[in-house]
Amino acid sequence: MKVLVVGAGGREHAICQAFLRSEKISEILCIGQNAGIEKIAKMFDVGINNFYEIAKIAKENNVDFTFVGPEQPLAEGIVDYFEKEGLKIIGPKKSMALLEASKIYAKEFMQRIDVPTPTYNSFPDGDAAIEFLNSAKDAPIVVKVDGLAQGKGVYVCKTRFEAIEALKNLMKDEKLSAQKIILEEFIDGTEASYLVFTDGKSYKLMPPVQDYKRLLNNDQGPNTGGMGAYSHHPFASKPLNDLVEQNIIAKVVEVIKEEKLGYKGVLYFGITVKDDAPYVLEFNCRFGDPEAQVILPLLRTDFVDICLAILNGKLGDMHITWEKEFAVCVVLASKGYPKSWEIGFEISGLDKVKKDALVFHSATKDSNGKVVTNGGRVLCVVGIANSLEYARDNAYENVALIHFEGMQFRTDIAEV
Ligand code: GLY
Image (cartoon, rainbow, N blue to C red; front, side, top):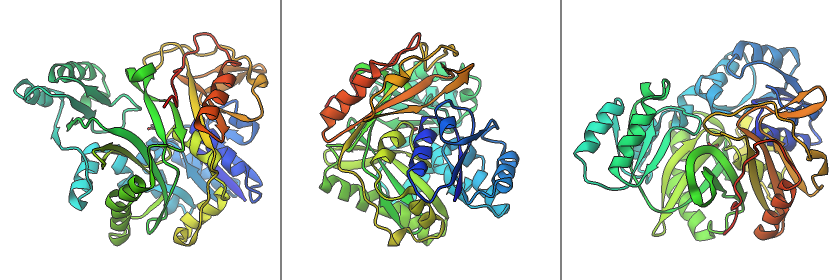
């Protein structure tokens, strides 16, 4: 079989690797540029929102199905476009990608079906939110922009004054200032991410993950796309997982089924737990990045079989199994990330990485036979072992072998 992967970051490298492990796959095609992925897939340097060109590649190469990595093309309707063209594709339609692409839509959806989520108020713009805060009681509060913001749309603020500052700053950003705003109650809980495969009728849980959104150790510094992750999550006990499934995941999938909303792909629930009660902070309509880099290496079942079950509406019949080992991912980022950064620095040491670790390329390219940096998050180093501690040691031992100018990373990933 031939499969086409849309997107070319660390998540998509992990997706391509998962396909590569399947004996059913004869060729992997991938949209984008990446020095790691190009070793295992045929790459096409086409924009991820150029649906016409991507569909043409799928048709001309007789691709059996397409798997979409990033949120942007899903939010723009790549699934609707492909289905109209008679092409098989995994991902939610535009109407369901709204669960991620509009925080207000997601909140209204959760309220309607009685899924626990922090209380909130929505505002047409930043000025209206500031006006509200000027006369509000002081308390920690979370500022969120309504739409997609590539990790720049959420500000956890200790006081209403900090929230006003955050709003003033985001209104200086051309794209963010045009967005509606949510002010959300801050719940001081423990976070975990629950991801499921779904065919729109049933779902299969993946191992819960801890991700690290802040740039610096001890959760300091600005929010990023993610600086690390690990799975399995020791905090995600059986009783908690049961509660999350019962109060949240099963309810959402049941509504998708009952209302025939149509959702074929990965649905991500960002959860916080306080006093044993889970609340949904956010949905993503796809694999997280770097969550995919710790989940997919633990998948024992053939990834192609899962994709075919999703496409054929047969996921309910499947039994998916996972390795019992732990995976820890450390993201290596460019100096200046997440604000601004330079690219083109040579990466050394990739050939020294031990066989029991994995390196997924987030933003690299080949330049005259050398691998160079090509974005903010550059590489993800994943250690795998039979304890979280060993997996962590394994990841950091291999991080120490890699170097590029300005390389920055957190040193506290999976320190639990
Ligand atoms: N790591 C969070 C995300 O993929 O959005």
